[in-house]
Image 1 (cartoon, rainbow, N blue to C red):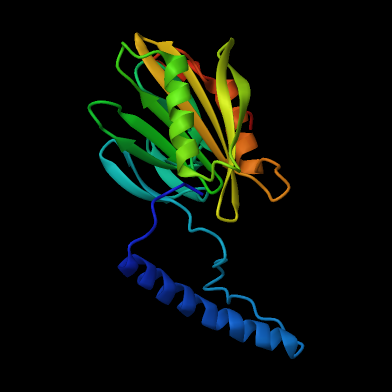
Image 2 (image 1 turned 180 degrees about the horizontal axis):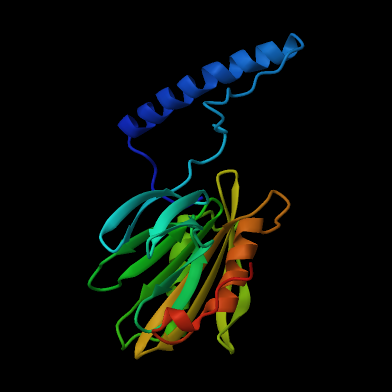
Length: 246
């Protein structure tokens, strides 16, 4: 869950209509279950319609283009011989700012804000949001962390917001920061905010997690942080960061 401003009335109306439309078949299914039967999505030509569709690619070899579906076998001519092949996407992708690099889960949405003052990169999962911000050279990382945490605290209910020191080991360095736990409506959020300087630029790294009602971190965020710890490098070459354990 990413913290965003309230939606405009027109957007709220659209969301309400979509939510109602989605609710109708659900109510019907519940009625069937009460009558002693269950309903499941019908298979379409043997395809499991409950799963995300596979990615498709175009593989070009020596000028010949072949349409490929990820994770499915296909045949391709190599030196006049037809051979079996398979294209499997990696579970993570490389990212670099030119000063630092790491890998992030492939299913996270990527967004770049080219602000002249503070350019930022965001990686958005279901429960996790990782944000990287780059500041001008005159800024001090510890002061930036304090400012970011203070601004976030103003966004939430101050009475529910609590902060404490935290740290994260990245590329052999212990990076200090602050942890902010807060509540937005019925959602419990945790923000770990870290500051450091690399390549002459101060950076702020923010890891947002949607906690369980019991205050436990989400499995998605735990995995994303482990991937960060394994692959983060204070350099500009993402290839030096080992891929996540398979």
